[in-house]
Length: 105
Image (cartoon, rainbow, N blue to C red; front, side, top):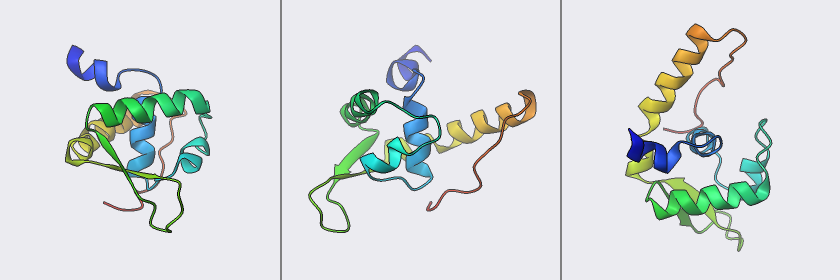
């Protein structure tokens, strides 16, 4: 468990992974999350997730120079972890709400 927490145990990292699962790909899309992640923190988390092989940087589909990000197989394996955390929050913490559905599998 300690090893996993070293990778994604801070306040922001799983939220970045959640946003990727929900369809975010670009830096600007991550900054639009309701939690309001600071841009310097976001840049650090994206870099750390890349370093650990959870995400990869890819060329943007629209051909612009700004990169896009996507989950690797290792990152996609976090989906059940996110689902379990969501379900726990919905069951046990009053006022917890969940986003509807991921934009893509």
